[in-house]
Structures are given as structure tokens and as C-alpha cells.
Figure 1 (cartoon, rainbow over the protein chains, first blue to last red):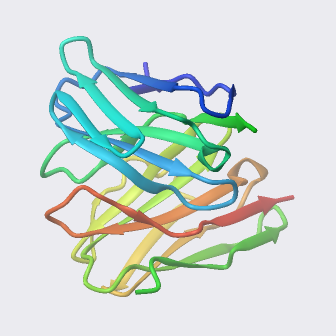
Figure 2 (cartoon, each protein chain N blue to C red; figure 1 turned 180 degrees about the vertical axis):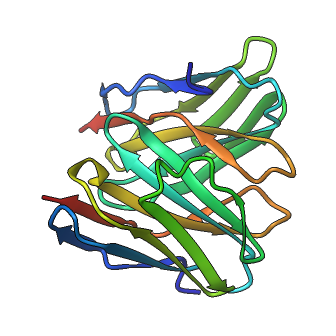
Figure 3 (tube, chains in turn green, cyan; figure 1 turned 30 degrees about the vertical axis):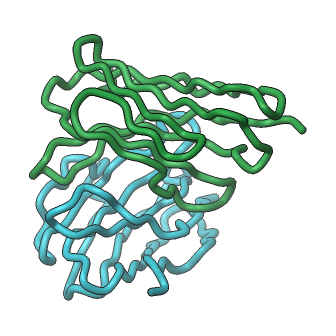
Length: 111
Length: 113
């Protein structure tokens, strides 16, 4: 079993829709949870991160972690065509500096 | 800052040839990571360095792969001999040791024919 599981999609939604991207993880030691966004033929870039459980909001993006169920979510409100990218979730342990990534979900927002 | 710089951006080589990928981390960062990304396996950590010292190379697939970091501003990933199954995008990333946020380069797209 992979430490971080993510449905690779692809996921296609109309512009303006609310998008929900999800991951599950198996390593109970994970303390940090990250979401990276990767545009086609580019390197991943950090979108948001959360520490432990709870929610974090940044503009149209909300990251949510439920450690009891080992579930990580990213919500995108009022989705835009510019949000079309692959979204990768990752877990990490403080002090270990090693991130474990999910496979990535390819998202397309249709105008 | 120019960010993490990788070269070459694209590499096409024949099976059996040696391939060397290069990375210049962000100035001041003291952790460096090499990842490989494929459609089938996603983004996998191959090896990472702290203060130029390899800390975890458990992701290196086999002895054909080797990585070095001779100084704080340069690292190489070498594949010798290369095989078609090594075809992938190889990313280098760097970070400050006290944070977990990694900054990625643009990647090297390797094709072994």
C-alpha cells in the first residue's frame, strides 16, 4: 500500500463549480500536509500546507485534514480555467524533511 | 532569486549511455531532493541531501543511479548505463532545513531509446 493514495482522475468540471480533491494516507506519523499544483510541463509549486488536523483557507482554496480518518482534502471555490492543473497532495514528518506525494489528480476547468 | 535551476531541460539518449542531470538549488537552502515523476508511479523521492550529505537514498532504484552534491550550490544525478524504463521527468527541489516546504525546478525530461 502506498503511504499516500490519490485518485489520478482526470476530473473535469465547468467553470464556477466547487471542486473537491481528496487523498488518504496510512502513515500516522505525518504531521504536515501539503498541496502542490503542477501546470503542464512545469515543476510542482506549493499551494497550501496545514499542520495536524483542521482547516486552512486562502482565498478560493481551503485545505482540510482529518487525522482520525487519515483524510486530506482541497476545496476550490468558484473554479477558474486557470486552475486547470495537476494537484498533488503530500504528507511529511517534522524533522524528517521528506515529503511523500500522492499520484496527483489531473483537473480541467471548462469555460 | 532565479529558483531551482535544472539542466538540461530535455535529454534524449540511447540505451546504455551515461546520463548526467544537473541541479543548482536556491541560494541559502541546505536541503536538496531528487524526485522522479512518471504517469504510472507519480512523484517519487530518489534521494535527499542535508548540508551536502546524503541522508536518505532508499528511493534510488538500483546501482545504476548515483547522486552527488560536491558543494552547497550544485548536485548531479547520474544514470549509468541508462535503460528505456528510466524515461521520466526528473525534478530537483531545495528547502531550508528547518522547514518542510520544498521548491521545485522545472525538471529534466529524459527519454532513453
